[in-house]
Image 1 (cartoon, helix red, strand yellow):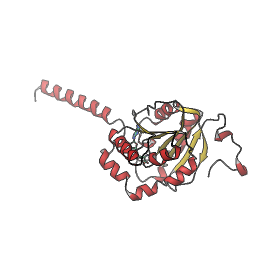
Image 2 (tube, rainbow, N blue to C red):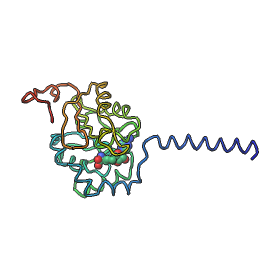
Image 3 (cartoon, helix red, strand yellow):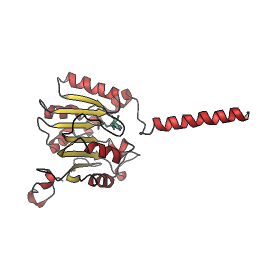
Image 4 (cartoon, rainbow, N blue to C red):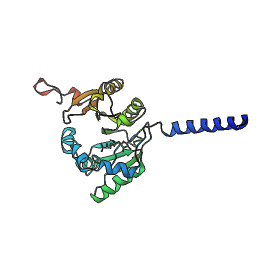
Length: 231
Ligand SMILES: C[S@@+](CC[C@H](N)C(=O)[O-])C[C@H]1O[C@@H](n2cnc3c(N)ncnc32)[C@H](O)[C@@H]1O
């Protein structure tokens, strides 16, 4: 191979490497159709314990909720029902096909309060700054710049808004899909969000509600029976 051809090959390989690393900076995921099918498996849907989770969140009509990384809408649709008629559910994802799936599901259910948002990898790009609940179920571990994403989310929250993280600690995960709760606690504390409630709904994942000590926030409410705000 001539020197010129060798240099040209290195250059092309270099350009490809830079291009690909940019394209896959975010954790790679399955194509939407396959991903949706796997999320809609009856076993998985059951494992979401949607009714129990919603009961803990105490959503009410009029709330503004962001379901971040909404996927197939397993939580988005029931949440939208819980905050109807005047509350808005923002379903945020980075995959437009999944958002289209959620829109179709909402239409089928006759819901008019679901708004889909094509977020950016590091920012949910919400159109409002008064979000009462930003909900992440098994999403944050997938994001490359997790602390950046949490910081971006905080900008959209109402002063007493809750950021809810449900994810797995390393010891509860059989593969790479884990995120230590202690890391989330640290990032949240840097934003003055503290674990206001912890719920033991799941055996294999933590469920923590983070909130700022503001106004009537759970953090400032008198704890009943001397215990914590959750389980
Ligand atoms: C494991 S699924 C969870 C879906 C849903 N929360 C559930 O539990 O059924 C993760 C979802 O997060 C989305 N996602 C991944 N990275 C994201 C990012 N940076 N911003 C928003 N959504 C993201 C994926 O497209 C996928 O729909």
